[in-house]
Image 1 (cartoon, helix red, strand yellow):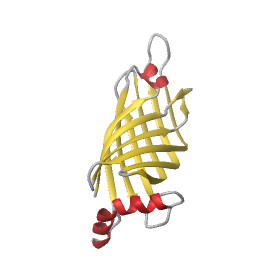
Image 2 (tube, rainbow, N blue to C red):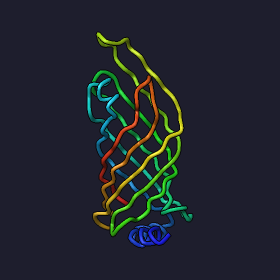
Image 3 (cartoon, rainbow, N blue to C red):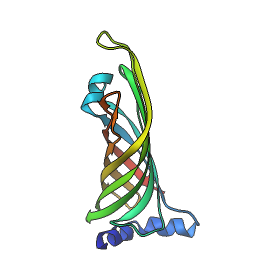
Image 4 (cartoon, one colour):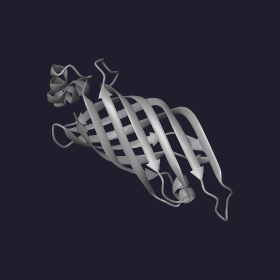
Length: 172
């Protein structure tokens, strides 16, 4: 609980400014997405793109500051493509100074398409499923931050569709 209060106090200038304008604080993040070993082999590419949008909730969290997080991961290169959309309830808790740890649970939509190669036939899968994420972040200034996130989305076409993203973000 103390860590949540410290994180909230670090973010208090952002929260105060947003409350004064009558809105909820938002964060936006963009970066790269390092694919799982299964996807790297199947798509023959290592990286995709990640974008995230979140809004802090005006409620008390169980372990930290609660938010509603929306994440999109996209890997269009290689022998196929991956597109994933996640909606999670997440909480971020300060662990030391300007570092935080967070967890989220929610649902995700995954669309995985594998192109035909000499080793396999073309295949595609679309599905909604329960998923989650774990985050480690660093507040570089009062508005700019770095966050690394493990996105758990389960299997698609027998391949682990999870990944790790590294993103720079901005608190509005």
